Length: 305
Image (cartoon, rainbow, N blue to C red; front, side, top):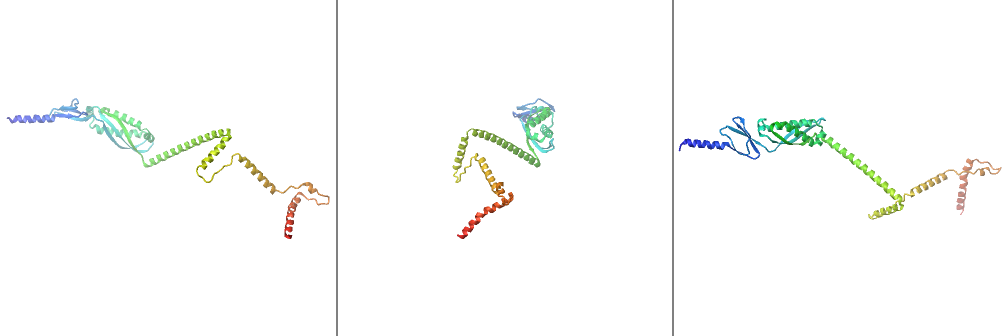
């Protein structure tokens, strides 16, 4: 056979092999024919003009999860933090993603980092820690608006971690501890108020029925005895308090009366005409002597016996 036939057959088979492409369901091909863009092809089996006449660029339509590296940011209240996030996006228009930007992955990453530093730097630390959902939405809107011209659709942005300095962590811990102590004191005060109110109502109820107080006392004594105690306390009734105070006052008055000198009757001091007139102080001095005389006579009688 003619050798030229084999040469042409081999060249045709090679051209056919290099011209056939298989694209997966989530892939699209941006085809260039002699440098000019042609309509997007795929998925499935596609044919390219061989010998370099047509070339293609594969573009995946799946959602890409891109990690945003930690960014050193100074917040509006002058706190230095490190913030990292994750970006979710997909290529919505493969033709524009290839024609409008050289490397849409690198460009999207740089835009996300810049936007993250800008947005977090305009907020205070408390807002960043407490309102992450709001900042996630703000970041998504800004990045999506910036990448819309590249045919990229941003589906979500999530702030992953906010790394604080150690000094700020200790300050936040002290603040949280003080807040918990404040809540504990408020709850304790509310409990005391409720207990006082209940005791007031109970006292008012018991005052209407005095016998109930005695029943309550017996119930308490029964509870004490049920604990196998060797000693049982019986408190005195509250009503005995004023009476004990009265008895104490009488005893104090009696002690003061015995310590004071006995009053001398003026009629005794007048006496007879021949008797010397004694003043009240002299008569008071003679009283102890008279009181001591019977004791001396008793001692002499005991000695004689």
